Image 1 (cartoon, helix red, strand yellow):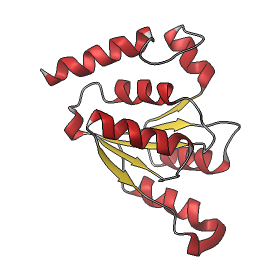
Image 2: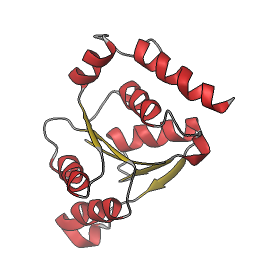
Image 3: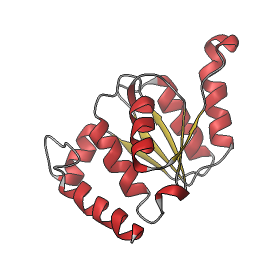
Image 4: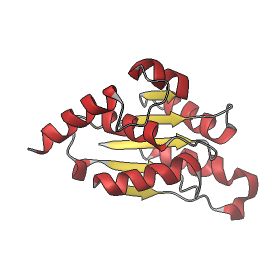
Length: 150
């Protein structure tokens, strides 16, 4: 399973990212999961990369080639989308142009895309202060995930 992750560099909640990654991969073994991301050293990309490493996923970072200047991010995003994915998880704060653009590319390419915002996740799990390990949705998702490992 290929999970394309796009997100804002100022995203701050790793727990929500983990909850969404676990849920998206609920029908796959960890070694069959690959996280594709833009390799930003901060925010959603960095958090997801650490989570994927801990979960035993393969990681496929795609750093932007800044020799292309301002076009570097969109070029990189287009390449990631063109490589294909089973799902795109988009963690966007304040309509981040790069992350929103990548999510749009994924939608246009026919990749199922889940736009996640903090309020949407809280509505799904019912917690105003989701910390993944305390989240009922996360616990159900994690139990399903670990059941697959048996």
